Length: 50
Image (cartoon, rainbow, N blue to C red):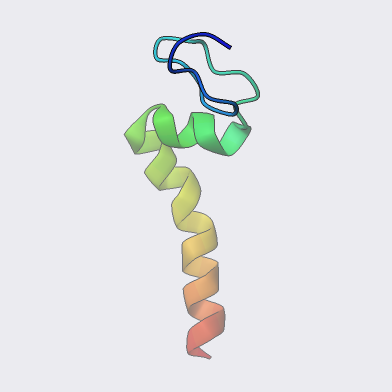
């Protein structure tokens, strides 16, 4: 271990490994994220309101 790098912390500027599809969706194009996430939110709202 070097300097301030504690176990489990990612140093700044390090490439992220293991990024999931959901994380890449949220950190990518905001317009696409809103469109993709609106479907499940609409279904959940309809199920909850009935």
